[in-house]
Length: 69
Figure 1 (spheres, rainbow, N blue to C red):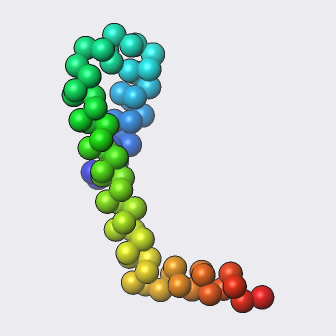
Figure 2: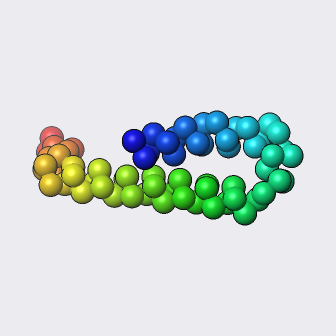
């Protein structure tokens, strides 16, 4: 759910700030904080999913099958 909120934030507010530049200039520190918070959420999501894939053997199976011809 947290990743969904981050995606929704990026979909609505990043596009909105691009179109309405006054919104971006109003409180830049808030936008920088929210942007980097979403980036950290994405990074944690990538790490967690990569770890889950490795635990299930999916990553090693894909790598092995790509080298075997």
